[in-house]
Image 1 (cartoon, one colour):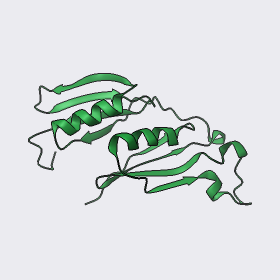
Image 2 (cartoon, one colour; image 1 turned 180 degrees about the horizontal axis):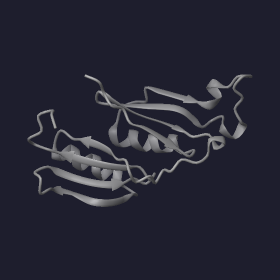
Image 3 (cartoon, one colour; image 1 turned 90 degrees about the vertical axis):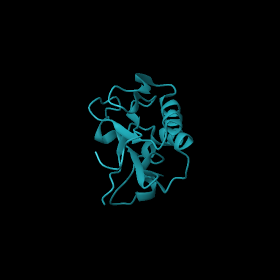
Image 4 (cartoon, one colour; image 1 turned 180 degrees about the vertical axis):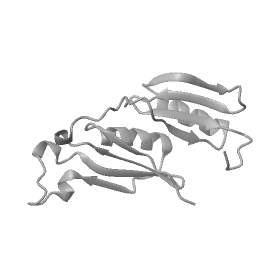
Length: 145
């Protein structure tokens, strides 16, 4: 079965955001590449971009959360984009609470985590980096939607 791995663009704060995500999810980074790591005469990197993140990956279960900093030469990315969310399916209410409370710290809660009318334990928020998340625990979830 294919896996879906979210990839987030940041405006120079990918490393800070991913250290925060790592503090909530745990684990270790599978990869960190900086722009200076790919610099060459054919692909020169501006000094102010050299230490920014070209690619970072944090395994979470069988999935991988990935990101990069968008070089200033490519324009700014909209970190407060509001059409996409990262959805987390927790294995218990306890895990859902841990993830919701950890990731939403310093952010804006849209829907407090609670039992929903549709039978799951659900909450939704925008984290302090502008990324939108949904956390859900469905005791009747059998791996299929």
